[in-house]
Image (cartoon, rainbow, N blue to C red; front, side):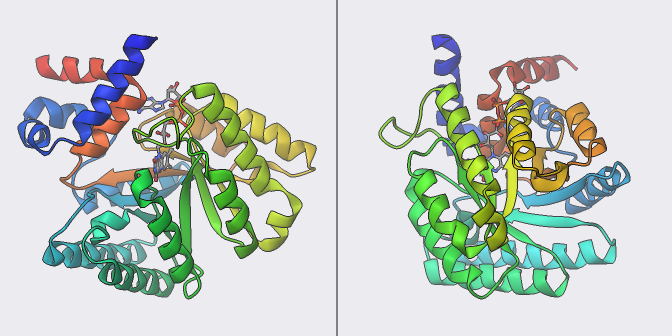
Length: 312
Ligand SMILES: Cc1cc2nc3c(=O)[nH]c(=O)nc-3n(C[C@H](O)[C@H](O)[C@H](O)COP(=O)(O)OP(=O)(O)OC[C@H]3O[C@@H](n4cnc5c(N)ncnc54)[C@H](O)[C@@H]3O)c2cc1C
């Protein structure tokens, strides 16, 4: 168990290394391995995958990969990419939402410019009848992400926020967000955080997740119009939340279940067949290294796919 924890920690540390990213990114074996979680690097590949999911009655959320961008010209081109992608989704009549990272829009260097870009993306999303999610990044960004969410959400109702169950603060944050009737996507959390800030044991994180999920299903939250989304592949956890919903007299559509493309696909289809609204998050783009390393850290057994890809 200690070896797995160490491996996880090494993989997350590796995700933060630009030199490792440069070393791995262009290797054919790494590109083969990453295809398990990503239909391709282009928007077209993501849209084709979303159309495939739609045929299975599973909706999609698209994420253009990238984070910690500091050059203003690049952040502008990220925003332009999202604006174009929104138009392309409308042209293809797909039920896609979008999820983005504020540091991809330059949060670390120019907060006001980042807010302006987010606002532009939300405005275009409203015109095209879709929805935008803000991903939650490492804890150094939690406060500022919450502040920006509140400010932009006050103008744009089509904006939702991801919150991380492993952070000790999240129960209080969620309590404060519920009266807004916000769309909240609960996830366990994918970064390396110290014990002072985050639960370290899986069981504690799972219990925190159930507590947060139950909070979103409470009557006052439903009355406020909260959109409850559980972003997890942990089907036992989802079953527990389903029981909570039943005990409150709520049906299968009381919450949405969002999973990542390529993970637990049989469960995605089973839940959709049971009437649970299911959405897969489809990532694309060339900057997949840090994101992919976090996927390996979530399940170090995935390293076998990397090894196998060396010999294909
Ligand atoms: C829709 C969505 C959006 C997310 N957005 C964010 C975000 O904004 N910020 C953030 O910090 N984190 C985000 N995450 C990641 C999240 O924090 C977890 O790291 C990730 O979901 C793994 O936790 P789990 O709840 O699936 O449970 P786990 O206990 O890790 O996994 C349960 C089971 O799912 C399967 N599984 C899980 N992960 C993998 C994997 N990588 N490869 C193969 N099988 C796997 C395994 O069978 C595993 O036993 C998001 C996750 C999802 C699904």
